[in-house]
Length: 296
Length: 101
Image 1 (tube, each protein chain N blue to C red):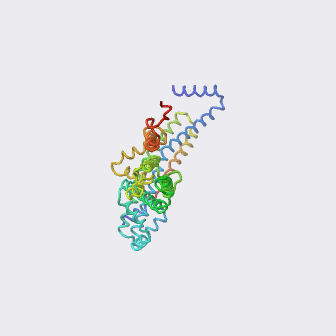
Image 2: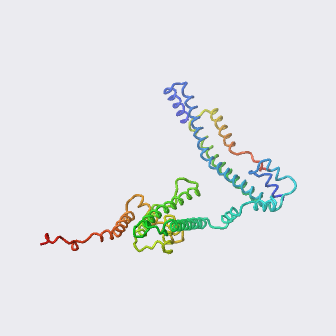
Image 3: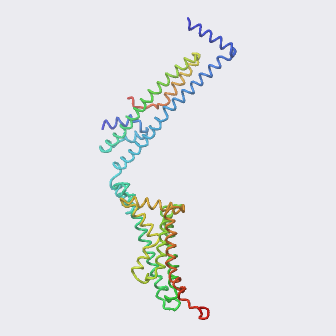
């Protein structure tokens, strides 16, 4: 009874407020809104389940294809298909199947960096041999050791050949990775290469014809140094090398920190040492002989 | 063998053509049948579990929807129309599988 009174009152209130003809339309609109809300909830619940169903079906089809290939395709056909694959592809497939992916990645890094080290060393050694035959053994007076011309040529040759090795290493890395935004040699290796070359160039007792020194010069170039860092960083337990390498390169690129400062320091000290013969050539005050009449 | 044929016939993963191929003579090797049966059975079980879960959830939503229509005082004709529409939508989510037999 009370309910019917309330309903009756509500109906009258609607009639009074919105007008008699508007009340059913408002309710119809409300019903559509409720239906839309309901459909949204249904979609929220059903769509993840539908996605899961499709994913499961795809995985099942994959399994069916594999089972069909393994069980129904004759073994002779399978063997024949394998024979057609190259040896390298079969080896890579075998590796993928039988080795730990983490170890594979480490092995790949070690082999790549070792190849770069060996390649850069061999290239630099070749350029040293070329320098021997081009000018180091030349008996012309212009190449005499006392003129300093051979040392000058050596410094230039070393610079150019190291530059060529660095650019070749970068180029091969781009080609292998098929990316234009990468390189191989980092600023740290480039900088260390230059410091080492300068030291060898200005050392007065560095015999450039000594075979052992030729090996040292061949081993000291940006390609070998970079290869060494990458190799050492990939060896188990070489994490600290990787850490140092990353931080040092960041400092060089920012131009801040102990590494750039150390480089400036090293070059200043090297140039000071290089300047010693020039300084000796200047007579000291005690050795200057003044004219007698002035001294008297 | 019978188990394999039964699974193929009522499989939810396979199409009509795929079923015909698998049911055709000559009989397939036993190892193949065993592996296929395992795959088909696994998919069917998962699919049925998903369907049961979804039916439960949708039934709850349907009940809530009808309650909200009642509370809003929707006219019986409109309520009936929307309830039928909602029921049809629910059934549309479940393709008719021939696994009842």
